[in-house]
Image (cartoon, rainbow, N blue to C red; front, side, top):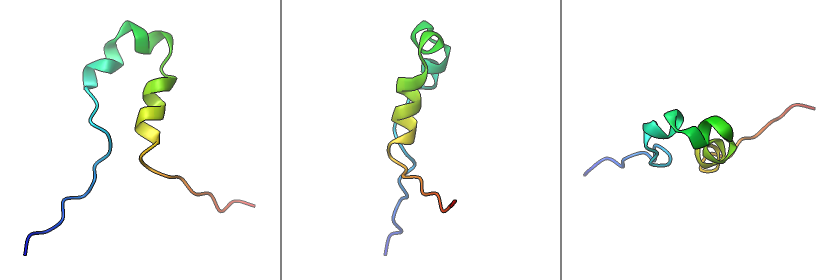
Length: 44
């Protein structure tokens, strides 16, 4: 039986971090990285 391959998140070209667009507004890339992984907080 083959093992399941875990989902490692979005496919993202690392060169995007050096782009002028990322330097001006990084938040769309951060959103692309964040969205596949839900975050839960148990803080009061």
